[in-house]
Length: 225
Image 1: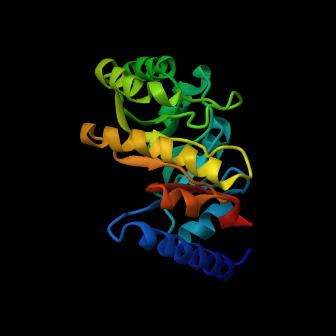
Image 2: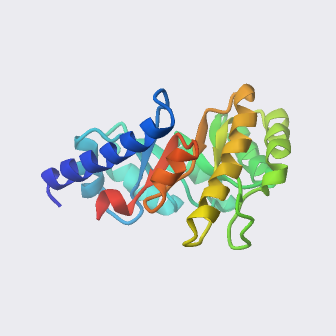
């Protein structure tokens, strides 16, 4: 794809995000994480060249490859996929800006242990299974605040930055909206404890996520198609 394609596409998406934002909160700042799992380094560079800085991958191996190829660019890398314990050390070596998918207290403990050995701090979001779907990872919403507090008090090498969730897997807009509202309610309760990000909304539902209070979007196909 040409640079002009990405410029035009990016402008269209920014405009739609701005319209959704203004319907909700004129003061809200929304961060875009470009999910680059389906593209290579040239596409990432093209988007970088028009101003996008945060990119996300859902496999540690893919992140490692792109991290090395694009090491000359000061990209802000995010990890958004389900994390396996045997990949934590490699992920921490790359100093990701944010790990979105800390999906349990047990996973937090594992990341904390390895961060301690590496003498690093890891920025993480607690993943909430807001729609209570068995195929999805994450903490049940009724345990969200309790788990967040438990991680915060025991995992000294983790910096909890907020929450993440994936919208309900359905075509029913009301159900998707409800799942976003559940996560946002948890986020609001955690803001006095330092929560900064409510990461929800992907290519198919990001406008709805903004309307429900998201301040971090994970956009993939809509940016790169």
